[in-house]
Image (cartoon, rainbow, N blue to C red; front, side, top):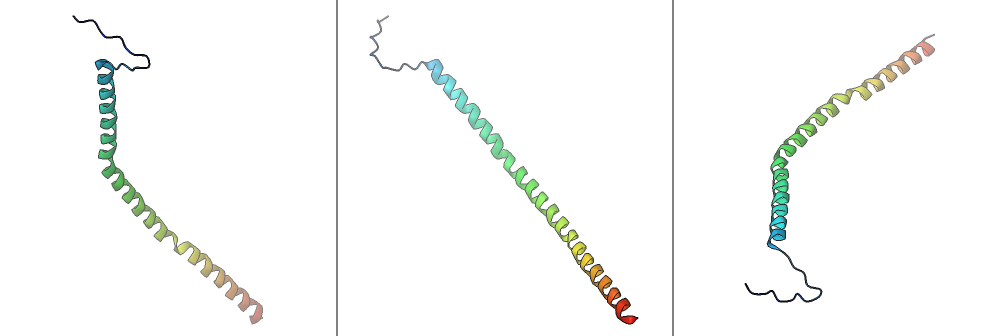
Length: 86
């Protein structure tokens, strides 16, 4: 075996074990991002479903203010008829 040369001050030594650990960590992170990307179409379908449900609720709700306005108008007409009819 040959003796190792002295390491200059301020040098950084990276071992193959450290390189392997970083490669494994990067692999795990890429795998997690890939799983999230695979879930995007499902999330898109869920979002579209929620949008459709909201639209149905909004369309079903519009008659309530109209009915309230018609009831108020009818009460006004009946009140005026009662007041002016006597």
